[in-house]
Image: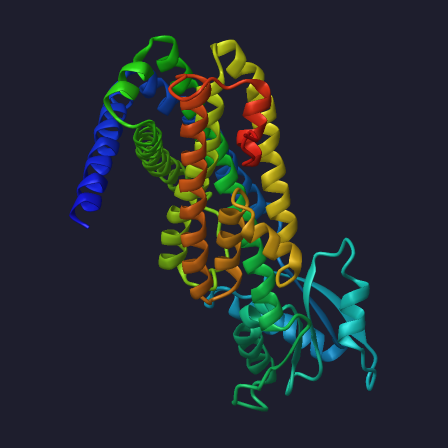
Length: 413
């Protein structure tokens, strides 16, 4: 027991030595400063475009309330709204009016459905002023319920001094509306995770090739186990990526606050604090999983030119991973989602999307353990492959023996 504990301690110390060496060397280099500044320009452009777009949208697109009531009651409602406009805020501003004949009634839902295509009408007010009815999506009718009751009470004065009760008919249930908005949050989180991983994971491959060209990797391999070298390099690159992520996040948030273009999303099912924590965990595992593959590829590549040749298949791999995870989001609870969760590269994307939609936390614990195991296996396999094919520290590896090693078959005696 003591020997195994001592061996593990030495292995862990080797990992941390490599990680601290790489972290310091990259973090305080001039190239890292330029790497940090590179994505800030797109962030600045997106932030300013979002602020301008929000401003234009707020000026150009105003929610419209449809009114389908008898002519006399419609005129009384509009006149009451004009009287209150100077002293009461957040009243409906624009209307589309259908004046009905005395005794005429309208099917609000069917009328709203027919007006949906190309119409600015968000909700429809119908019924008598003494008992008005609002029909429309949950968010719109909840927003206008109070102002409509106030305007109707003003229109009924002096015959009545009580606030009428507004009947609400939601065309989209609150639960369905919440689920739909959480799906958008899940899609946005997957997209952000994909962009960050794609932007940052490529550094691992080029760093490995550079150290191979300078013979540094041979010195490291002579001092510590190759597994520790791979683990240390990945941990260092993850730390550097988290530093870059923090800088970009602070700058992006400042730009969006200045431009007024902070996007609003429905709160995820697990809550924002837990979702942020899971987002950080799943970003780390997405980076480690993809980075371990890139580290293996970079270790086998002989020159920077080979890395450039391999960059296109690597980019296509990331795109396929993203598309698969996005497709699985639309099939939650089905076998395709389970496949996306079990496949290592798509597992972080699928589980982060699940956190936005489902409140259960127990599956995340199993997914984190599974992803950690996959990272360990990929690094172990990559280090072994690098040691046998590049460092030549094992028996000579021919093409046939290489495939036997991949399939786990030994040469018969």
